View 1 (tube, one colour):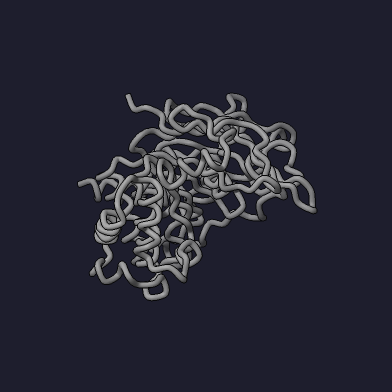
View 2 (cartoon, one colour):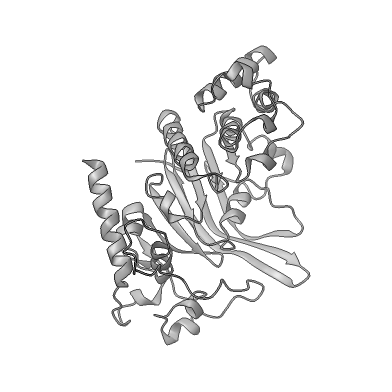
Length: 351
């Protein structure tokens, strides 16, 4: 049986602002096992990046407040740790691939030296050994002529190559957990595919656990083992990739699946869209936060927050539609067709 590497329990993160207290993360819970990839998916502002930054203890206090919960890494709660204690974990046991490689890299320092800094901080090696290790990392992440590239500055690399350097820095100390915060957002589609394939290869070779943060369900199917769908600071659906893609239960997940562009769409077939916008978390709505945007909302959705209903041993969803007394709602036809296409594509790729 796999051991839990990371357990997040009832995590609540608030921010003090001039407009009031923003409840950015509201009781998030999930478990990540050794060698597993968990994708956290949701719109901008749903709390994905705040959750990942909280795991790294990168949220400044103030304005951030760890209001409640635990972040257990190998059984040890990270929240009470000091900056000095966390500095031994960051980059060593837990590393992050940031969204924009140009801001993640120091433009005034050669890329080789930036990789060496991590190695020298966390490993007892000489400068020569660190240099050799840095060059080997550049080679492993697919950068040609790594000996020459070692001495170049970030502006001499393309966007995709810069992201590979960021990945090399994240891997420098052999972390057990890699957090990829929308690592392909700033890249074109072809380079996105290459970076995703690289992450898959890294996980296969190193048995690294990965948390993959994204707003795009399309990149999840071939990367993740399990998926957590976030909305308004909460996880509203949680399950395996097959659970989420072939048997989604939350109307928000239906919307995310249906709003993805599909080359197989007929010319007269409209793209499914989620109406409205996410709620203001300085004053979270009563009941189900998604209710004002959900055309299938029940009267109780506006009065009482739904619990997390168990669909199967691997699948959970936070919607009153799963209550035994709720009316049966069929998944919208455009989304059913999309799910059927995913299934066929998956079967073809397996064969």
